[in-house]
Image 1: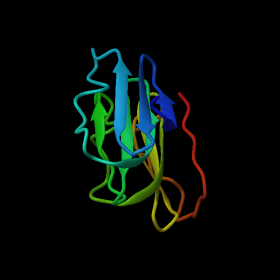
Image 2: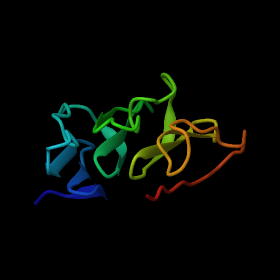
Image 3: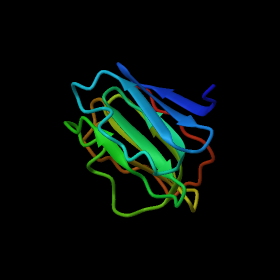
Length: 129
């Protein structure tokens, strides 16, 4: 029996972290929301947006894949290490290792990369539509 330690669901795709830290994906591939993710890479967190996916690797780096129409995984600000992630419909959020929040992509009725009024340290995040 396969055991999972985390699961995330997007609009029509799903992700799961197996007990050994490897990632499994299934569902619709029309928007590349689960392109081939290397099976030997260990991840410690996952998030699924409408048509995009995020993962935190063991070293804190953030692979991102899937639909990128709104910059939800292409406008990530550099090689930043993170400790928590959330994926909204067309935007993404992360808590950096220093506790500050970053966001990228498109938020409803706002520019593609808005600035969070900070620096404010946060402990948890969630993303909606």
